[in-house]
Image (cartoon, rainbow, N blue to C red; front, side):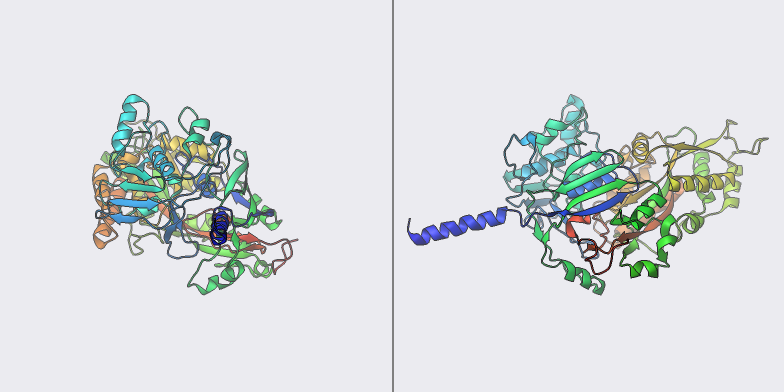
Length: 601
């Protein structure tokens, strides 16, 4: 070989090494102390559905697509994909190229070999979402959409075994790095789905090595993301450490918001991630979280409404906190909080006029304005439309048909036979005792919600009992249609109305339809809406669906909360993203006392 060819070969070898090697190991002395107000459930993307588990999954696993860190409104961009999908066949075929040289974190399941991410990993992971054995909460993302996938799931229901090796036309991998998704109908939301953590890539070897009898691997997450799970004490502590095999990236985000200029100057050009360790504590009590932040034991936290007077002066930080360098990232979350009734419950469920009247009366008895003032300390806005601010399809001018009206609620109950007995409490129309059981968490917010609902139901002479359970258990019971009534929240998985309107779709009972409602007119409109792009025609359908929610009253829409993310002075580059929840790979920290503003002593 001549010298010039040797030189070229050496250059190519060096270039390949540069491309495949991590950009720079994170600094293990840099630690972020974070907090969750409720417990996680586990870290299998196909099986976990709560916000807190999903936040951790975003750090451990990777989807094909993600969101630009600073772009507002939220903008989908490639993550493990080389580029945005190539779309053909009138929006029914998506072709995605997976980047070469991405590797899973080392694990014994790989038998000592370095395991590269491939297109087949995504095909396998998508199939898991609809495997009936797993009983996952995310089947609705794909049901009825991918050619041949529903038939595969039906076969599994008959045989008891999902055939992951079966070839279907809707999920093809023509080569190692190409995934082709064929849809039954045009789906304008597929890019959002491919940016949502349930569609993260998992390795089949890992699932087969660690899954339980239901096919779930909740305690052994192995992904290609920037962090690995180092320690997990259930409902208490989660520790993540930087993945030494992660490829890294250079921080180079842009923004048109002048408020981001300082953040960009802090971070531009840095090799990411910088933070080597993330320690997450689960602290359910509001005051305990605030005290931990004030003592410098937490680097970042969301300041819930009950704590707002301690840190906020209107919509800004109190001057004494701002002087210390504490930073605030604040906006109305793309979420809805709502009260739901179980439409399968033998006392308050059903679709007869008297049962609808009972639920409507309870909805009319509840004073949302009082909750915002007393419980949320003004850190929420009342919503009458099921699509929240910041989400495509939101209508800020919609006037809800159910308003606070205790007198009207009492008249409605009188009219439909819910008479008051000698003890002053109402009975069912057949004379049986009437008791409504409200489920809530055993924390300060749960106790305040109990009090508000007790006051509301007292005003219409309905007895109320309280059922207390931890957050993960409440999620489990509501999916089994075993709760009578609860207050729930849903924060956007992706910024489109479909993500919220699916919450009452009949086929989503056991997944996200916690009211266990099956309203044929609603289902028909929903199925029509998901085949339409954002348009005035689709918005009219959403209005019709909202009127059906009011007519049958499976819900009482309530509020969307402000998110008040506080960070200590030494945290750099943080801006709360409306969809992403694990911003740790985008931020940096400086040692105590070097951040330009002193850390609390």
